[in-house]
Amino acid sequence: MHARRWVSGIKPANLTYDEAAALSFWWNNSFAFLQKSKLQKGENVLWNCASGGVGTAAVQLAKHFGADVTGVCSTANVQLVESLDATHHVIDYTPGTSVLRQPSETACANSMRHP
Image (cartoon, helix red, strand yellow):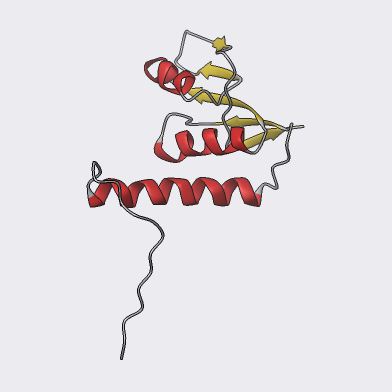
């Protein structure tokens, strides 16, 4: 019996195998969520936990698909979400902050879509 070989890409030399496996998990899940939502160019998307593994991937993919994205995260992660250059707005959910920030030209996505 011959074993089948599955190759989805080449692992960058600066990543461990664990890191490479996690990246594919994050991106595949993000892509599946966005595909299931039938995201259309120009739609508004709100992504909860925009600073997590799946969130950071989804934010960037949603922007790639042409969505206007709002990312939700804690104060500690606002800069990270802004740095993705994919969010239109960033909402800081930390109690007592109630901050809605508008970074340059960014976008995010997840649990809720707004027409």
